[in-house]
Structure formats: C-alpha cells, structure tokens
Image 1 (cartoon, rainbow, N blue to C red):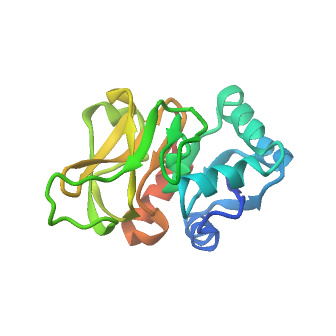
Image 2: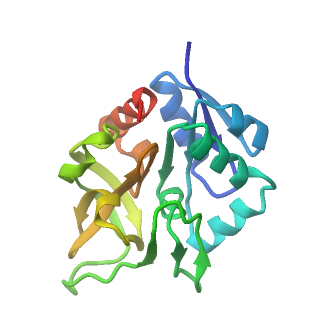
Amino acid sequence: MAEIVALVDYGAGNLHSVENALRKVGAEVRVTADPDVVRAADRIVLPGVGSFKACAEGLRAEAGVIEAMHERVFVGGAPFLGICVGMQLLATRGLEHGETSGLGWIEGTVRLIEPTDTSVKVPHMGWNDVAPLPHARGHEVIAAGEAYFLHSFHFRARHHEDVLAMTDHGGGLVAAVGRDNIAGVQFHPEKSQAYGLDLMSKFLEWKP
C-alpha cells in the first residue's frame, strides 16, 4: 500500500512540482492545510518558496497546522522532510526582512549568504555538489550527488551534528540538516532530475 504523504499547503510552496515528484516515486499525496489530514499522514513534506518571513507568517496563518505537524513528528514519529524555505523554517529564527521566529526544531539562524570570494554571486543559483558528512549515516535520505539550488539565505546550525551535508558557493553552505526523524534540504529535489527523484524515493523508504 502506498505511503500517504501530507504535502503542507500554506500558500508558499512549489506544490505542483513537488507533488508530481512524490507521485512519480509512488507516494499517495494529500496536498493539505487540514490539521486532521496532517495527523493521519505516514510522512510529512513542508515545501517553501520565497522569503523566510512570508513563509513563516503563511504557515502560522493556517490554524492548527504547526501543532498537527509537531504532534505527528514528535509524538507519532512520522518522517518529515523540509524543502528549501521549508527546511529553513526548522531553524530558531530567520533574519530575512527583519527577525522572524522559525519552528525551532533544529537550533540555528537563517542569514544572508556572504561569500568569502567577492566574485561569487548571490543568490546561489544552479547545480552544485551535495557532500554528506560522516555522521549523516542515520539519514539515508541524503546521498552524495548534484542538486539544483536557488537561495540567497542559508541555514547556520548551532550544532555541527545537525548538519547532514554541505555544498560550496564562495565558502561552505549547509545543504541539508536533520536529526532523528527530521530532515531538511536547502536544494530543490523536484528540480534535481534523477538525483532529486532518488532522494524522494529514499524519503518514502526511510525508517528513522
């Protein structure tokens, strides 16, 4: 039986492409802002496109959704995947357009990319390497490869062990974070062709 994945719809995600990618690897997708659907799902995906502030405000505007996600992930143990700004929202706070509180699931701050090499452009846009760190072995979702990135702000995790993979763009940038049954990727798996579909497939099989 197909895994039911709640794809959280709060008006700030690349929903259609993410939904298509999940369906392509065999997921039964519920695009939803209904807390009851989130609580009943086998897995949860939180996408996000735009600014940290707008995404955080959009998510908080959906009554009961954050509480349902928290309950399903922390009490029910459902695997969770945050994508792009959906990954950034795991942080304690974001500094885009002022300071905004995140979910606080993984301690850290989302701040502007400031390359050490001034010839490197921001935003970080295009294909780049994803290099898993040795302690990421429990998160089989994240594999070495190339993925598509598009972002001007990046996740600075407080604890090194919460960083699952790095990439390089005028200096090291976090490509993936996670702990226990939570994973987040800065890149867009839905735009990352075979690598992205493989990640989605691994997420459906992941048993943290």
